[in-house]
Image 1: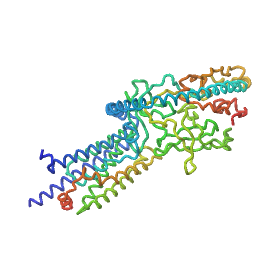
Image 2 (image 1 turned 90 degrees about the vertical axis):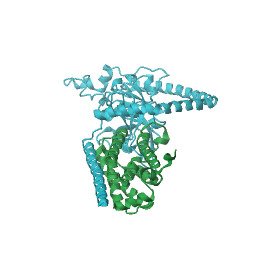
Image 3 (image 1 turned 60 degrees about the horizontal axis):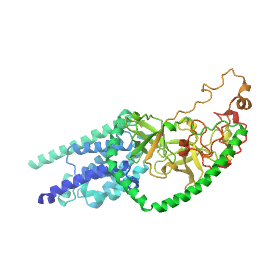
Length: 176
Length: 375
């Protein structure tokens, strides 16, 4: 019982909850569960995961592979060509990795600002990729709205995707 | 030394993650470049799997929702019965009026020797396949839905999708057990439509985020329809498919014309009055142009035989009187069924001012000189 409250177990539970939340934001909008779930714009939870996992990168291929899989799942649910969301999520991961390397002693404001900048760059990429995927005239406006909502809620879910303790902050700083 | 090794090892691991992400990003780009998943067999199989999962996932929710709805309906059953009885009385009056107007309309059509209306022609609504929506569009780029009927049930690409209110969209990919319907408000959706009363032709353009945009289309300058330029759409006017382009039959109800704050004409989609739960997928064979039709007069046929007067004499084009119970503008052709009337593909009974549907000039050139009583 005590082990459940240990920092490692808490972190593991938070990570699992974060993954479930990210998957839910991919699947739930595609299910006809009523107007509340279908009400756009739903946040793009995988962007949280991509940025948070990049900040706490464990150095293995598993997280990029998981992001790629989630992207393909999102492509399938959205009815678009495979690769669009996978590319956007992996791009977010790479941008998040760059921001994590730049930040020596990240605070909530800098992490949030980094996420906003990352989602803005991802939105620009979506504006470029959407016409390729869906043809001329396709707009990324709804993606931009969803990305804005995602950025707005990021501080609330940050602890599910990245370590927020002082020890880890020092580690992130040391990574530089 | 140990610290240096740890740092080096961490750098190697970080590099490996970034390399893996970069490689997968390249793979995603390649998938995107080949547009894998756009109507192909891989996407259809994926749709089948996703539809199966969605059915399982939404099953309990639908059961609970249905139970709650039934309980809610029982709660105010007496009030609803009274309201329905009042509505039924009103509707009987309207039905009588509609029947009278339909008879009058048919007399006018007989006097004018109008050919049968082409509303809904080519669509086989009697053989439509009813399907339940199992997935909505889950992305910010497209507006599609997945129905739980596929090739196994006879659905093919190009089937039109309707619900009880009007046109929903068109089937763009079919799996074994599921099919994906492109909705009218998708970016890739362009539907030729017309005003049911004003006859103004327009192109319905989806924008995914907003109600579909209605672009008034300047049709060919030499076309007789140029005189519709002087008329505009009417606010609240019923918008129906015009049948141009051959993707949809003529006369399917699309929605009502509205104007937004900027003065842009839009359509409040009829199918979206309520959440779309069930759809009917109907086959549609576009009608051939006269020059390609086997019934068209041969090239050596004397010109006189194709004049309006002769055509009227040689063809029985006068529609037979319909029973009063039929919808006034229901298709007297292959779709003259109660089913078609139930789908409301035709204008409302209040279209008394329109004694007939002006035919398309390409399909019915013999009416080019007739007066437009309805305009």
